[in-house]
Amino acid sequence: MSFWDQMKRGVNRAAQEAERQAAIARLSMEINQNKGQIKDKLEELGKAALDLYREGIIDHASLEAPVVEIGKLEDKIGEIEGQIAALKTPTPQDAAN
Image 1 (tube, rainbow, N blue to C red):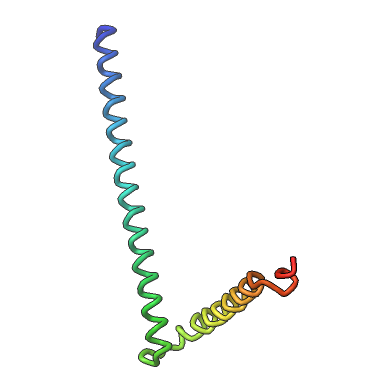
Image 2 (image 1 turned 45 degrees about the vertical axis):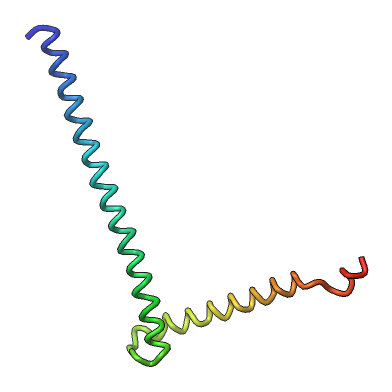
C-alpha cells in the first residue's frame, strides 16, 4: 500500500471518528434536554401536589413531611423578608442626617 493510500485511509478513519463523536455529543445533548424537561415537569407536578394537599383534595402520608418542611421554609423566608424590609425602612436617625 502506498504512502498516499495509507494517508487517505487515516484521514477517512479520523473523519469517521469525528462523525461518531459528533453524533454522541448530539445524542448526549438531547438526553440532557430531556432530563431538563423532566425536571421542569417534576417541579410543576410538585407544586400541583403541594397545592392539592394544602387544599385537602389529596391526602397521603408520604406528602405530609415534605409539605410541613416547605411550610417551615416559607415561614423562614417570610421572617428574612421582614428583616430586609426593616433594614430598608429609614429610622428617625436617618432622617436627621
